[in-house]
Length: 190
Image (cartoon, rainbow, N blue to C red; front, side, top):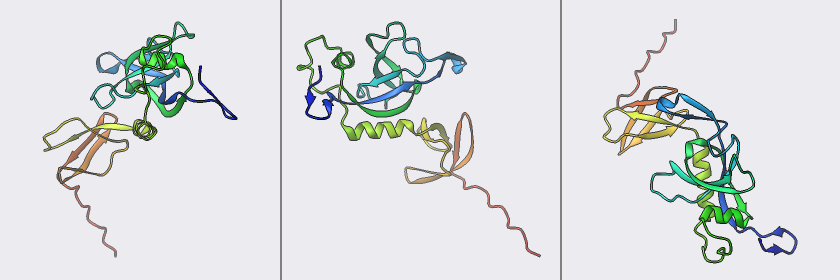
């Protein structure tokens, strides 16, 4: 159990990034299969996110939360971060949650250290980043692919010292061109 402080109640065991499972998630080819929540988590379920374990930029994350079928116990699985919304930072008070995040056995709380914890600044930064809407951008004439920009996209994009201009965007993404947009003639005053 968490230690008690004098006037504030239980002392937190650490800081963690928290999110909710999206109400609707898209699966299958082209994302055409729409589901309510995820197989393991109900829509809106609160999940606790472990610090990144892979170098994929956070596309897949380890989460712990109350399973759809057994709301008494925490379960730990890997999911895609795109299925999560409302990222925020929260304190962890439950040793059972810590065990779920770290896969530790009961009684091992002292041994697993702080590898389930997030440094506060990093957790806040990731929450801000994930809460910012993003869309894919294609940049004509640039060697790399897979650019992400904010939604709505900026009018100009700087890559490798070159300015690219927004040429088109819709729900599927944005397209940038090295050619500046055409200048419309000013109306003549008469």
